[in-house]
Image (cartoon, rainbow, N blue to C red; front, side, top):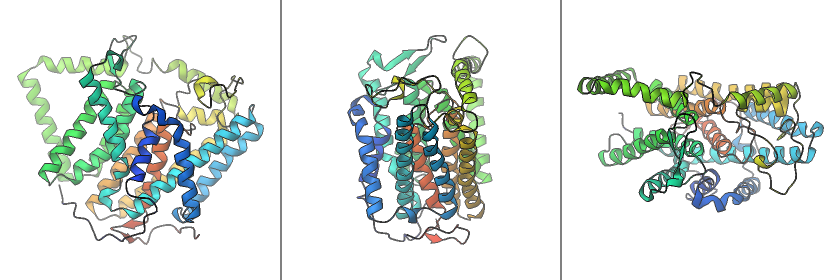
Length: 432
């Protein structure tokens, strides 16, 4: 791999100490971990603190470009507007308000991080979260507590969850850690000691991901990996293909039965049941979400609203499990809550994000920059692929929601500099 020698860095004044952002990100994303669960209630305090500092420093508007700010704030305003015709206005006002704070704050954190750090450190805000996530996996194996595994009801697969709140959440945390580890593996490839460390951590992440049997998280990583491969030079793609083919053929030659065992195991992971329907475990959830989306119509039922659930109170806080239902698809949940209008605005917002990344990729003549863009694009697309199976988009307290908007912020900062110089195809930015 080519060297990651960094271009001269344009030094910028840091708003936050270098360790504060990784620590805060770990609190925001890892609150489902058993030994960090007590910090869950501190998440919105962290968000409000960050937002207050950005406002005091007059940095909020300067981190947005005009085009993206217009689309984003129209979407957020619509989410808030649905509160006025909601069945539970108080809930919708609070949910949409928290959602706006989450999106704006984490976008700013990500954008500011990308602007003041070199390309090699663009994803380093995730290092503490990734370390804690891997620790939950290793500690679970070392301690060997049977409570850290589940037996799937129909397939009898053992679902490993480490010290997290469940196997799907454990897999999702591994999936969110993977882009950072993949980028560090690539950037450290020519340094033997660093390469060994990062490769070990990356393989460990994939190992725990497979143990979790979380299909949505595995899909997230597959999408990230495919975009990473797409970003490689043709010669490296050929080498990677040859090495992979050689390994597979060697295994089959030495032990032919392993091929059929691999097919059997793969089928067990894909279907998770004796039935041949790939989505058997999601059908009932999707059906209820589809029916609710039909009720949402053009304008939606209101932010945070679950169709048919009007028994909201503060006895159990704002946790949706106490007054709502599982929304197993983010896109249907968007239509249910904010209507077809909200879904159109959501789609336009995503088009703006990905069009910018594609334009950057096409114009970039630096191989490391293209790989980073491929990994960031793959992580965002992977999150969207996962959101088809998990309804996290409109949940402001969900780890996936926070992760996504941090990454969007970083992606937009990559759009303002290439090798730390302004690029001439960047869109105008808002002057404070």
